[in-house]
Length: 201
Image (cartoon, rainbow, N blue to C red; front, side):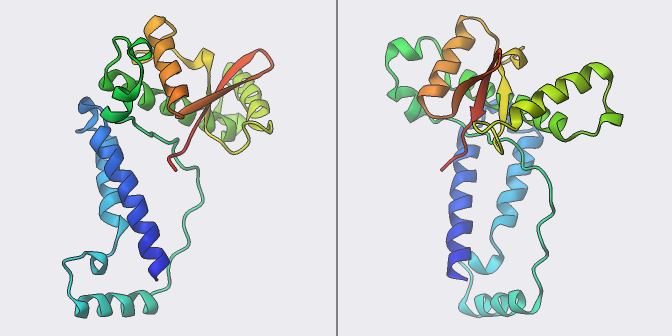
Protein backbone atom coordinates (compact mmCIF):
# COMPACT_ATOMS: atom_id res chain seq x y z
CA UNK A 1 0.00 0.00 0.00
CA UNK A 2 2.82 2.44 0.92
CA UNK A 3 4.56 1.78 -2.40
CA UNK A 4 1.32 2.51 -4.28
CA UNK A 5 0.99 5.82 -2.44
CA UNK A 6 4.61 6.78 -3.25
CA UNK A 7 4.21 5.89 -6.95
CA UNK A 8 0.94 7.81 -7.15
CA UNK A 9 2.47 10.89 -5.54
CA UNK A 10 5.45 10.73 -7.91
CA UNK A 11 3.10 10.54 -10.91
CA UNK A 12 1.11 13.46 -9.53
CA UNK A 13 4.31 15.55 -9.33
CA UNK A 14 5.00 14.81 -13.00
CA UNK A 15 1.48 15.88 -13.98
CA UNK A 16 1.79 19.08 -11.95
CA UNK A 17 5.09 19.88 -13.72
CA UNK A 18 3.43 19.32 -17.10
CA UNK A 19 0.41 21.46 -16.21
CA UNK A 20 2.65 24.25 -14.93
CA UNK A 21 4.60 24.39 -18.20
CA UNK A 22 1.97 23.55 -20.81
CA UNK A 23 1.70 26.26 -23.51
CA UNK A 24 -1.05 28.73 -22.61
CA UNK A 25 -3.00 28.10 -25.81
CA UNK A 26 -3.43 24.46 -24.87
CA UNK A 27 -4.86 24.89 -21.37
CA UNK A 28 -8.43 24.76 -22.64
CA UNK A 29 -7.85 21.83 -24.99
CA UNK A 30 -8.25 18.11 -24.75
CA UNK A 31 -4.72 17.75 -23.42
CA UNK A 32 -5.41 19.84 -20.32
CA UNK A 33 -8.68 18.01 -19.75
CA UNK A 34 -6.88 14.68 -20.03
CA UNK A 35 -4.28 15.74 -17.50
CA UNK A 36 -6.88 17.04 -15.09
CA UNK A 37 -8.84 13.81 -15.35
CA UNK A 38 -5.67 11.77 -14.88
CA UNK A 39 -4.69 13.88 -11.90
CA UNK A 40 -8.14 13.55 -10.33
CA UNK A 41 -8.00 9.77 -10.77
CA UNK A 42 -4.43 9.57 -9.52
CA UNK A 43 -5.15 9.15 -5.81
CA UNK A 44 -8.20 7.82 -4.01
CA UNK A 45 -9.78 10.28 -1.57
CA UNK A 46 -8.22 8.45 1.35
CA UNK A 47 -4.75 9.57 0.17
CA UNK A 48 -5.70 13.22 0.46
CA UNK A 49 -3.84 14.72 3.38
CA UNK A 50 -7.03 16.41 4.64
CA UNK A 51 -8.85 13.07 4.98
CA UNK A 52 -9.47 11.64 8.43
CA UNK A 53 -8.03 8.38 9.70
CA UNK A 54 -11.53 6.87 9.60
CA UNK A 55 -11.87 7.70 5.89
CA UNK A 56 -8.45 6.19 5.26
CA UNK A 57 -9.46 2.93 6.94
CA UNK A 58 -12.75 2.78 5.04
CA UNK A 59 -10.96 3.35 1.75
CA UNK A 60 -8.34 0.75 2.57
CA UNK A 61 -11.06 -1.82 3.30
CA UNK A 62 -12.79 -0.91 0.04
CA UNK A 63 -9.56 -1.46 -1.90
CA UNK A 64 -9.15 -4.88 -0.32
CA UNK A 65 -12.75 -5.88 -1.05
CA UNK A 66 -12.87 -4.75 -4.68
CA UNK A 67 -10.57 -6.55 -7.13
CA UNK A 68 -8.45 -4.16 -9.15
CA UNK A 69 -9.32 -4.25 -12.84
CA UNK A 70 -6.45 -5.17 -15.11
CA UNK A 71 -5.20 -2.18 -17.11
CA UNK A 72 -6.45 -2.08 -20.68
CA UNK A 73 -3.90 -3.11 -23.24
CA UNK A 74 -3.01 -0.32 -25.60
CA UNK A 75 -0.40 2.13 -26.70
CA UNK A 76 0.54 4.84 -24.23
CA UNK A 77 0.66 8.34 -25.73
CA UNK A 78 4.08 9.79 -26.53
CA UNK A 79 5.60 11.73 -23.62
CA UNK A 80 5.08 15.48 -23.50
CA UNK A 81 7.89 16.49 -21.16
CA UNK A 82 7.63 20.26 -21.24
CA UNK A 83 10.53 22.46 -20.25
CA UNK A 84 10.35 24.92 -17.39
CA UNK A 85 11.37 28.58 -17.29
CA UNK A 86 14.35 27.62 -15.13
CA UNK A 87 15.59 25.15 -17.75
CA UNK A 88 15.27 27.70 -20.54
CA UNK A 89 17.06 30.33 -18.46
CA UNK A 90 19.88 27.87 -17.70
CA UNK A 91 20.86 27.76 -21.39
CA UNK A 92 23.54 30.00 -22.78
CA UNK A 93 22.20 33.11 -24.51
CA UNK A 94 23.78 31.82 -27.72
CA UNK A 95 21.82 28.55 -27.57
CA UNK A 96 18.59 30.16 -26.35
CA UNK A 97 18.66 32.96 -28.92
CA UNK A 98 15.14 34.32 -29.46
CA UNK A 99 13.40 31.16 -28.31
CA UNK A 100 10.58 31.50 -25.81
CA UNK A 101 9.14 28.94 -23.41
CA UNK A 102 5.92 28.96 -25.43
CA UNK A 103 7.66 28.18 -28.73
CA UNK A 104 9.68 25.30 -27.28
CA UNK A 105 6.75 23.71 -25.46
CA UNK A 106 4.48 23.99 -28.50
CA UNK A 107 7.22 22.18 -30.45
CA UNK A 108 7.36 19.46 -27.76
CA UNK A 109 3.63 18.93 -28.14
CA UNK A 110 3.99 18.80 -31.90
CA UNK A 111 6.80 16.23 -31.98
CA UNK A 112 4.82 14.07 -29.55
CA UNK A 113 1.91 14.17 -32.01
CA UNK A 114 4.30 13.03 -34.79
CA UNK A 115 5.40 10.13 -32.59
CA UNK A 116 1.77 9.23 -31.83
CA UNK A 117 0.93 9.22 -35.56
CA UNK A 118 3.93 6.99 -36.31
CA UNK A 119 3.03 4.56 -33.51
CA UNK A 120 -0.49 4.34 -34.95
CA UNK A 121 0.86 3.55 -38.43
CA UNK A 122 3.20 0.89 -37.04
CA UNK A 123 0.27 -1.02 -35.52
CA UNK A 124 -2.44 -0.23 -38.08
CA UNK A 125 -3.68 -3.19 -40.18
CA UNK A 126 -3.11 -3.03 -43.94
CA UNK A 127 -6.83 -2.97 -44.82
CA UNK A 128 -7.22 0.40 -43.09
CA UNK A 129 -4.43 2.10 -45.05
CA UNK A 130 -4.01 3.35 -48.60
CA UNK A 131 -1.14 1.93 -50.66
CA UNK A 132 1.01 5.02 -50.03
CA UNK A 133 0.38 4.93 -46.30
CA UNK A 134 1.03 1.19 -46.20
CA UNK A 135 4.46 1.75 -47.78
CA UNK A 136 5.22 4.34 -45.11
CA UNK A 137 3.90 2.02 -42.39
CA UNK A 138 6.23 -0.78 -43.55
CA UNK A 139 9.18 1.62 -43.48
CA UNK A 140 8.23 2.79 -39.98
CA UNK A 141 7.88 -0.82 -38.82
CA UNK A 142 11.43 -1.55 -39.95
CA UNK A 143 12.68 1.49 -38.02
CA UNK A 144 10.61 0.63 -34.93
CA UNK A 145 12.10 -2.89 -34.91
CA UNK A 146 15.72 -1.67 -34.70
CA UNK A 147 17.60 -2.01 -31.42
CA UNK A 148 17.99 1.75 -31.00
CA UNK A 149 14.27 2.49 -31.37
CA UNK A 150 12.42 -0.65 -30.25
CA UNK A 151 9.62 0.15 -27.81
CA UNK A 152 10.32 3.90 -27.83
CA UNK A 153 8.27 6.80 -29.23
CA UNK A 154 9.96 8.32 -32.28
CA UNK A 155 9.52 10.63 -35.23
CA UNK A 156 11.53 11.29 -38.39
CA UNK A 157 13.07 14.47 -39.70
CA UNK A 158 10.73 14.20 -42.70
CA UNK A 159 7.73 14.33 -40.32
CA UNK A 160 8.60 17.90 -39.31
CA UNK A 161 6.22 20.11 -41.26
CA UNK A 162 4.98 22.71 -38.75
CA UNK A 163 3.20 24.80 -37.83
CA UNK A 164 4.92 24.80 -34.42
CA UNK A 165 8.16 23.25 -35.62
CA UNK A 166 9.70 23.66 -39.06
CA UNK A 167 13.11 22.85 -40.49
CA UNK A 168 14.12 26.51 -40.52
CA UNK A 169 16.70 28.22 -38.29
CA UNK A 170 14.23 28.50 -35.40
CA UNK A 171 13.23 24.86 -35.73
CA UNK A 172 16.85 23.72 -35.78
CA UNK A 173 17.53 25.82 -32.68
CA UNK A 174 14.56 24.20 -30.91
CA UNK A 175 15.83 20.71 -31.78
CA UNK A 176 19.26 21.65 -30.43
CA UNK A 177 17.68 22.84 -27.16
CA UNK A 178 15.57 19.68 -26.86
CA UNK A 179 18.67 17.52 -27.37
CA UNK A 180 20.64 19.56 -24.84
CA UNK A 181 17.88 19.29 -22.22
CA UNK A 182 17.51 15.55 -22.75
CA UNK A 183 14.02 15.66 -24.25
CA UNK A 184 15.09 13.92 -27.44
CA UNK A 185 18.09 12.07 -28.77
CA UNK A 186 18.73 11.17 -32.36
CA UNK A 187 20.14 8.39 -34.43
CA UNK A 188 20.44 7.64 -38.12
CA UNK A 189 18.75 4.55 -39.55
CA UNK A 190 19.26 4.04 -43.27
CA UNK A 191 18.72 7.42 -44.92
CA UNK A 192 16.47 8.63 -42.09
CA UNK A 193 17.34 10.95 -39.25
CA UNK A 194 15.33 9.51 -36.35
CA UNK A 195 14.46 11.40 -33.15
CA UNK A 196 13.55 9.40 -30.04
CA UNK A 197 11.48 11.07 -27.32
CA UNK A 198 12.70 10.74 -23.74
CA UNK A 199 10.34 9.97 -20.88
CA UNK A 200 10.36 12.08 -17.74
CA UNK A 201 12.41 10.37 -15.04
